[in-house]
Length: 329
Ligand code: 5AD
Image (tube, rainbow, N blue to C red; front, side, top):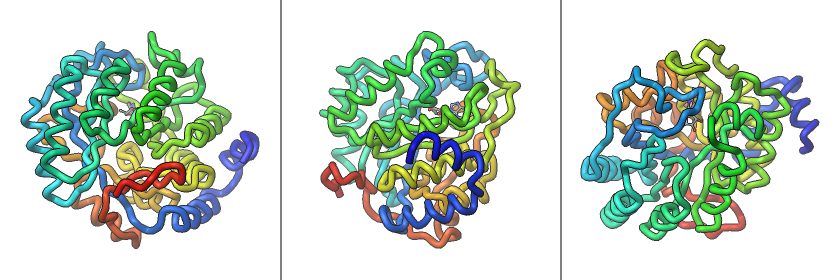
């Protein structure tokens, strides 16, 4: 599909039509399983200044927390005991955790449980990525946020899209399965930009892509902007499925925040095949305020929605389905 064709679908193809096509491609290429990834948001400290995100360093209105390594490991093993086969360790860009500390957390979890580990820790030294891969980390999730370099630079003071993409390319070289993704409805974003997002995910041969609406967070410079549109978000999701056929696509928490039931079910019917329930203890997660009113997607809700959508719970680790990579489970 060309850039212009994508733009024209975003503009004028009815949502139902795109959903129907994406659902068919999803069924053919990745089947009926929905993979569950358990998230631990272990620290909300962040050294960055992203204009949209409530964890930005300048935000003094949230209480900051850091979970101890033992607490993280304990929780990860508890999640594994509940049958979840992928653990996602996520935080702000928090350099208080040394590369060594993260590596030891990864190593211990991998020793004790048969799970895949996804890291989502933002931009770090390339040597850190390498040590974590050696420690056994399987995947790295780092959304590209927007494929428009000018918009990227405006939203991420001091950072560039180029840096972000070099980090992702390096992660891929190290053998990580990688996740990209963007926000839909960012202030200043155009349909052309979204078409580039969809094409970038494809060009990168990403193993996964997280597509969610922009949601205003009141204590950020973008707090007064309207949220991204659910229909447009689902259209982007469907087009990613139509173009990057065998990719993993989560029904994101941001989508659930717009509409917990309908949003997730719609995503599952528009190409999504992954849900990422939150296992962060609630006294912490209430302060993981990347945006306001963040939905609490629990394991129970996840199971209920999968069954409501007429799908199966994935039993394995749900590794990359890219033809170029060997299956890992
Ligand atoms: N709206 C939507 N998504 C957001 N994220 C951060 N802030 C927002 C927001 N205001 C997403 C980004 C980031 C992830 C941690 O959360 O895509 O990658």
